[in-house]
Image (tube, rainbow, N blue to C red):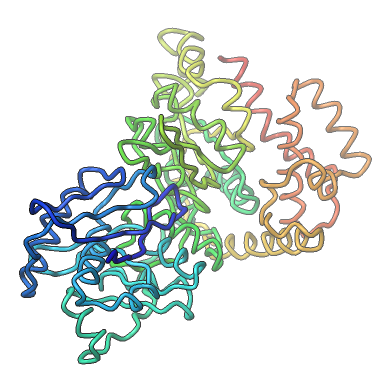
Length: 510
């Protein structure tokens, strides 16, 4: 008799059902696993054999064949241990097959029968719910899986013997409660920054519309401080955003104790990061930093110091909101709807353009340094702002009266206006102005006549690309939302264009 257990294989954030088939055959004593399994899956033979022996169940002297179907789908990871063990127990007649038919199973096993945490419990629970099944997962994964919904029957034992006792009725395993990460301390506040009022304004606009931001300035100007305070003015994620971001974090194994949070992700990789680390890939096509920043912020400090090919790989995700990792036999797609915040010095020595400073290499110092960034990449950044050095007079001032709380309130109001507007237009999948494009952008961001005239004149003078033209409209729409205006006016167009003038000067220096 062939016993069956259902588990999953992960392709991006999608969990593909896998049928685990176990059957005892006559012949030489062997334990074979087939079905395009990787090394971790093949090694489960020894873990399953030892775990069953630890609970007093030795395998009979027969040939045991385990097939993972579909056979042409790659199987990776240690979460196949428990479904293989339960299928074997069903083949032995220890576990009823009708019980296994009601559940999807994931989990890693120790040699003593204990169950260890695995990645991907939340996507697996969602896949199980979609198929009308429950989920059996390790105790450590229970709080994470419980977010899939109250209607999902979740069993989260600590050992395999607890599963057997649960089936017999001698032990009842209660459903785990959803885990919520605790808030550890307050976020950095904008009150900590003295001066740089233009930088604070640009940060508020970027937060209100989820616009990409580039800050150029000398060392010590406060670029990193501004970026680190962006999370303090961003609204928390809603239920849908939290679920999507948590699914990616689950696959990457970054949900501590299976607990999720409503805080938006803030990722700040070092400039030595490789392309797989940033956009995803590697041996198992894991999500990269841009996907881990989904619905959050990706901060790239010292932007020109990143490898050029790594930066160029950001161009497609910035437009499409997703990244595709291609391999010879399959490809996976991860969502990557992130907000890019970048910081850089104006030149190698960092002081180009500062009063009284002359670069040793002259104009070449700034030109060569800025030329490391391609025009198409810079053109995708909605807001570019130049920050001057902080003076002693600024540092001697008292702390500003307005902090992150006041700015966050204005940002939340602006985002509420955007969501309500998109809902009226029937495009609820859009939440911020930065996502608007095409006909939707024309409907929401068409300026009044004075604004349209100045936009057309400035577009010719600044030689804006079609992409740059539309990004000016998006930023102007956000500025109008911050002012509580239904129509984009001339003043909004002028301020939005000022954030592109830095780009024009940037290109001239390069």
